[in-house]
Image 1 (cartoon, rainbow, N blue to C red):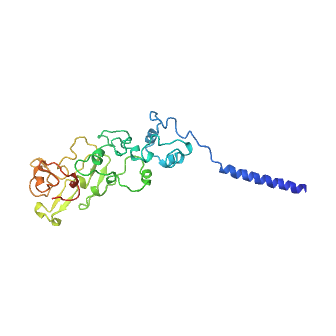
Image 2 (cartoon, helix red, strand yellow; image 1 turned 90 degrees about the vertical axis):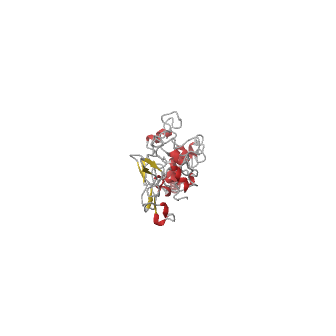
Image 3 (tube, rainbow, N blue to C red; image 1 turned 180 degrees about the vertical axis):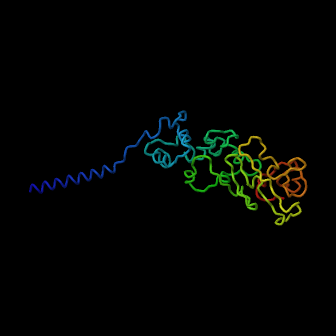
Length: 293
């Protein structure tokens, strides 16, 4: 009888110990509230998270932030919301969090690059504004004409964050099919080349219904290589991309085009594009891969 009682006590003790062990293994470890350095959330601190990310060559993953602050950044397990400062619809995942105007979600490209530069002479700023928001010679150009979107949907925000420089992969507007050229950007010289939009084009007389306009078998552009961060104002000068030197002066007339025309004469045939003063009147018909006559 004593043996049976003793065995019963031992069994109960073992079950108790096993149960405690299982509960112990299921206990959630305490949150480490010292995960970030002091001042991580203060813009005036040298430990402000923007500076920490920059000092680590922008090698960070927003999914790590979501582990503690919740997938929607509203506070999560630490009870600290990121949306107090990141008030844009996408919170910290808004494009202008890192580049562009942090206060205006309509401006997601520089001025204001990753290093805080806003002058066009900086390589991170360059001609972003003139291409994306204030393009005076063609349609405004979207980000993915130069920075192709290889990942779609919400995952793009996470996937494209990587150490500078930004990855370059030109889109359809910059690619000239009839020349077989591959557009490229030189990170040393800070210029692009082989782009349709800067004169990398070739139109064949044999394929045109207006062969009278040709003085040679092809009308070709200059295939100009503009300097991305130039401040001279010369990079988009009329004739730079599609003109040629005639009598010592730059003419807007492409090589292989009939005649010796000045800018004022372009309107004779391209009246919906340019006026008699040589001024663009419809930028949507300029750099559009079509010949509007």
